[in-house]
Length: 203
Image 1 (cartoon, helix red, strand yellow):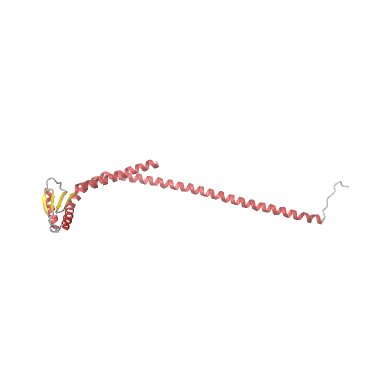
Image 2: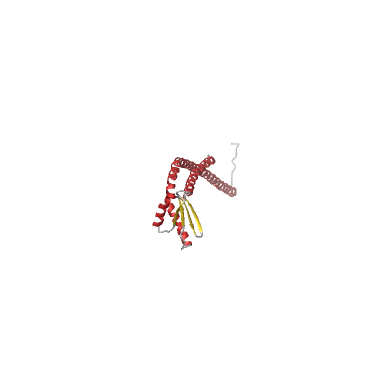
């Protein structure tokens, strides 16, 4: 005869254990769902953080590339400006006297017309360099402007003085031409200086 005895369960005992098994399974299922939700949220947060970090890296690389391109373009522009500076200075130096001489009659005519407008019965007096008396007289006559023209040896060829009853005007286109040349030169110098400062700041 065997020494082991098998325990037998009655149907009533099995029925009593079933609710406890169902409750345990429900708790395990709830725990699994909670764990899944927590893991999903944590994974989503990690993926978002990684994506933002990658975006920051790409943006930083793009900004750096754009900055390098800008510095390259600035360097090229400064090189071109430095190369063209002597030629531009020579062109301006050659053209400004000619333009000033061509504009002298126009400026004198404007001054005379203003004088006549201020005193219609007066005849303005114009003083200019001796070599400009005839050319200036011809140009004023062609414009229909009446004025007395006198030679003034102390004046330069692109200089004139206009006198009328209640006023005086001094036209010095040589000084205007010098200002134009100075402005061009300052602009070319500032281009080079500003470019050097940018290179030091970003270098």
